Structures are given as C-alpha cells and as structure tokens.
Image (tube, rainbow, N blue to C red; front, side, top):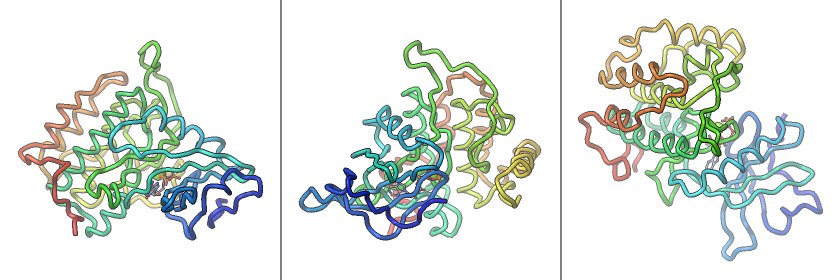
Length: 302
Ligand SMILES: Nc1ncnc2c1ncn2[C@@H]1O[C@H](COP(=O)(O)OP(=O)(O)OP(=O)(O)O)[C@@H](O)[C@H]1O
Ligand SMILES: [Mg+2]
C-alpha cells in the first residue's frame, strides 16, 4: 500500500539539500502518489509537484515515465520536468505545478460541459495526442483525469500528463510500426477502445477512440457502461466491452451533434497501423462551432 504522507528523506538522500515536502497529497494513482514541494535552493522558493514511487510498487514505472517526458520535451501542453531523483525510500519526479484535472473540473461544472467548451477542450486534447504520436509515442491511458489545466499561469491551456504506461508505436530508428500482437488489458476500462477489450496491442487509433468517448461523456454527462458497477477485474472488463460493442452508435450519440458519431465511426474503422487523419478529426470536432481553443471562455472560467 502507498504511504499517504509526504516522504521523509533518508539522511543521505539527495532530496535533503534541495527540497521540502508540503503536507497533504494532491493525487494518488495505481503506482505513485503526488505531493507539493518547494525547491529551497532558489530564492524565492519555487513550488513544484513531485510524483513519488515507493519501493515495492510496480517496478521502475516512474523512471520510465521520466524517460518518456525526455522524449516529449518541448511539446506545448506537456508538463515541464525539473528533476528526477532516487534514494532508498523511492523515486521522485519533479514537475511544474498545474491546475485541476478534467474529471474534477467536470464535477465542478455540474457534470456536463457546454458544446462550445467540449469543442474547445476536444481540439486541445487532439493537439496533445497528435504531438505525442508525432514523437513515435502512445500515451496508453487517455482519460479525463490525465488532462489538467495549466494552473494560474495558463488556466485555459490543457496539459496531458501521466506517461507511466506509455510505449512506442513505431521503431524510431527504422520508422516501422511495431508489429501487431496480443496484449492483456491493463489500464482502466471506461475510455478504452473495443480493440483493447479484444486484447489487441494499442495503436494510434485507440487513443482517438478514447478521445471520442471523453467528448461524448463531456456532452452527455455519462456513458452507458459507467453504470456497470464492480471492481476493474475480468467481469467488468467483459461487461463494459460487451456494452461498447452492443450499444448502437445512434443511441450512444443521441442528443448530440451527428459529427461526434461520424468521428467515432471513422476511428473505429481505422486499421491497427493506419495513419489517422488528424485534420479530418479536427474538422469533425469543430463543425460549425468556429472556436479558437487557445482563446476561449471555458465553462469553468470565473
Ligand atoms: N503537475 C501536476 N500539477 C497538478 N496536478 C497534478 C500534477 N501531476 C499530477 N497531478 C494530479 O494528480 C493526479 C494523479 O497524477 P498521475 O495521473 O500522474 O498519477 P497516477 O499515479 O499515474 O494516477 P492514475 O493511476 O490515477 O492515472 C492527476 O489526475 C492530477 O489531478
Ligand atoms: Mg493519472
């Protein structure tokens, strides 16, 4: 089980000379816990977020996440990483503090977004996913809680974080697509594609199917399979997968503009190694709502 409190650095830890942890955690996931801390070597102190992996958890995912962030360096809307340290008590990834995640924002907006905000959020999310794909990487855990706003500095910019489950979709030396194979489902279920339920190795198309489910969720406030209760084990995996396949797209997309259904149909038709047409998806999300997502008054604006 994760520790709930900020870690106390070991005497000889390199943490001691540089960082002070603040009380209270801000996030708690499958393999790591997130806290606030101050870098005390700077004047004034700089506030950072630190993601901590304690020993004995799933091994070395945080080190992998750090390596992925290095591959993604410089992309707008990907958090800036400041440091990575390890000591006998764990591993620590230091990054810029950002704002609340989309799940929490959605709750604070009453459980649904307006169409204009959904379009603006969707266009930014698509930009993030496309730029990650351009570096040969798949995020593999696309869901609302892994998108956050930019915090005080950039309230209306949407960031994509949490690259612990990421992987390459192509061999970056040969540029060849990673061959198709079977892979057991590992991530959470609500936003994953039908292909993932069928234990196909994820590829770019699957991240875009997840984007479709998120946008439908933002517009409608729920997805039919979220009603299936129970732990994220085999039973729920089968039931959620069954419902995703059986629900008519016309029902899933009832009451929202038809273009979101067209978008889902398009991504579900993509082959495993197909190059998605991101501009086509951008046009579908945008429709007649001519919105600049980087200059938009979002539903959560004060
Ligand atoms: N830099 C940050 N600034 C602000 N909030 C953050 C930051 N990093 C993480 N968080 C918050 O902490 C939550 C968990 O972080 P993250 O997704 O990286 O951890 P995780 O252990 O992989 O979680 P999960 O398994 O639930 O996806 C995020 O949903 C977000 O709300
Ligand atoms: Mg997460």
